[in-house]
Image (cartoon, rainbow, N blue to C red; front, side):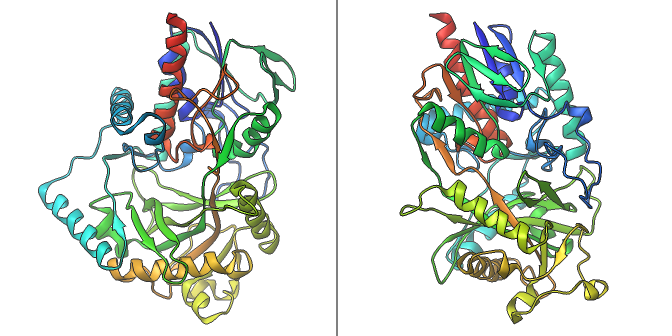
Length: 450
């Protein structure tokens, strides 16, 4: 059986891992190989690489996203609704076992840390929120690169073919069509990641696949002095607080915490976004994390991907093609931040390639207010996180709005095409995407045995 996988991120790689030795597998990605994914101007993005080396290539966007791996059926994983909780838990354990084979171990908690987690949960409940813990590991961006290289080499040794810099322009029911050549398939797995969500949406519409839309996550990247949150991140590295804004009762959550990390810039085709990462040695005096508002849409507009793109493009225009940075104190006072006062900042930004300005020009009022109210509640749990010196970068948007409808093995209404990962709206992170890849592969293996 000939299987083509589009996308060499966690979903595509883990699908290939499961299928290796059982089918003829070709993995296509529009980006470069692991070792060649080097940003030519880190921290000061003057070039507009197409595709962006941070987002595309073997390892996916997760390669440069700090290497936090959370093994949970509730955090970053939406497969309970597809296969049920118990089967999903078993799937998470399979993925954890595969990672363990590559030296990735879950952080073990002492009794003292377990007690602190209960205290964090209690404090969150007091302000009307919650704190979720799940087993997690931290690899670090630097070590994750080596892990992915080894993972890929093992797959190649089993006969998996990787073809990079392949820009897929069309999908038919029998072929994957790139700008230079076509690839026939018996089974196809589409795993393009978040940066490929818009591309996948076009494929879904062209082929008439059944789909709907998830809520989208839109917000800011928060940067604070590291010691403010060390008491929390020393217990749980990737803190997961779930809060409700007072005015609109919207869900506001923390995501992708990077202790000792750096704020980074992602270059997309029509806009820029911010993100964060940290290496295994955590070498900066700051900690950053995303604070995201979960925004569902119903009518007249249900397409959350389109909504997210409009906001991203607005940020691109108002920031003159750069992310916008503003002190929280300036946000509260209704005045922009000024680059002339950069040397007066008590928290030194780890991303230089920004415009000091007003985030209110780039975010809808509702989302900006949600962020401010969410930070205020978080400040009651972590004192000081909402002080005037806290830095806010915009925009941070997670494009997993498209939700392709599938069967229990992630097969679409197209029959011989499956989907997996963040781009299909089935996951939000490395482990969740990997679970999708394994599940899609298991469905194909069942077909092979018939």
